[in-house]
Image (cartoon, rainbow, N blue to C red; front, top):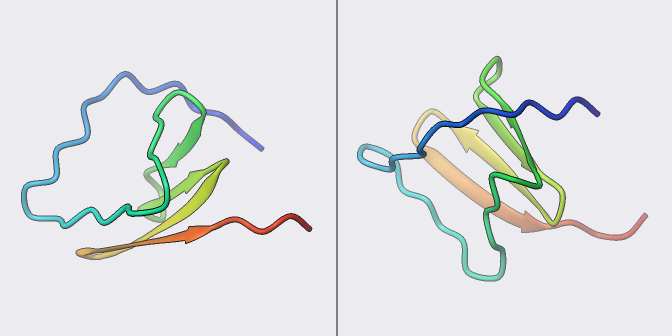
Length: 60
């Protein structure tokens, strides 16, 4: 689990960010710009070209 500390502002201009039951925290979340995927601890954010899907993470 690599945590990248990126001090960048997330601007959703051409992208729609939908988070109803999840909160996006850039401090306790992992940002991966390689596959354009946002993975956070509390929730999982998968960004497909212009789509953000937030799914609650289930305890394994």
